[in-house]
Image (cartoon, rainbow, N blue to C red; front, top):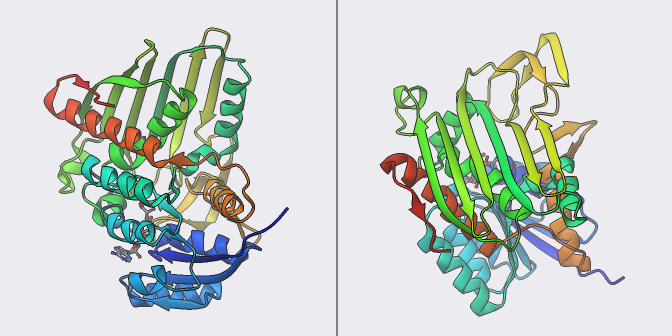
Length: 358
Ligand SMILES: NC(=O)c1ccc[n+]([C@@H]2O[C@H](COP(=O)([O-])OP(=O)(O)OC[C@H]3O[C@@H](n4cnc5c(N)ncnc54)[C@H](O)[C@@H]3O)[C@@H](O)[C@H]2O)c1
């Protein structure tokens, strides 16, 4: 099997960009690594910890670097568009974090550029790479569930994490930024069947008291063209010291031949200690009781990173370097997911059902 050498630029040296850069630095096909951030110190620090060859506070300098032939965009949600468009313009394959963009107009610009330049773009819906969802997809493909009639899912997380996300991007609401994972997973399980209509209701006081005009809870009903009904809900205002260090999820899929019941709440792994357990996402927040391995992107064990973002990064790099299969979300799948999440927000706001243009 032939291996293509990779030169990777990581744009955005924050929490997730740092993980992507560490995974790239370890990958055998990656011969050159460059990182950038508007915050030069963040880029410099990441370059030092990963042994990157080049760093800059100027995204153009890393994206257009002659040794770079693929680009990871891990900037804040409202800052995806510009670096993604530039990389596509130069014909360099892109991995952009979810959501692809915050408006359908921006998502359409990205798709048009990817298609006109023939440049592949994938979107980091890393929860697909958690073993239970990969194995569920496998069982669906094997036909053991039959035709999916209904899917129900609930994701919850703490208000501390919700506020951390909103501080970064005020439009990255719990629906657009987090329920999006489960809209993506539902769409992946129902691959090839189009969503038709969205109805949603939301309510909340916790985020409004904290100065953000978003609901604590939003629950949606999405109907698909074949009649399948999908009920997805998010609650993001658990107390800050709830023992989960990321999302807790319950997902159930019902079909003509079977069902999948996936308990992803992490309640089966409990650590209790007098010593503080740091929250991986929220600087300075410590716990005395925590669900192990409940951090959404993955977890550090024995000096290495394990979990969805690690596996997803490796799969993308293997795909580029060796042509291996890549079950990551495509730009068009990510656009459909964005259309649904924006419709959920609109329906919750107006009380009206929203027909999807598709
Ligand atoms: N897959 C996952 O598990 C997962 C988890 C969390 C976040 N995310 C996604 O990853 C992305 C980043 O989230 P994060 O948690 O790393 O946030 P973060 O705030 O830790 O990092 C974002 C970084 O981007 C930098 N930045 C902002 N605008 C920039 C610009 N124009 N150019 C260069 N750098 C810029 C910021 O300075 C910051 O260092 C978001 O899209 C988010 O939704 C994915």
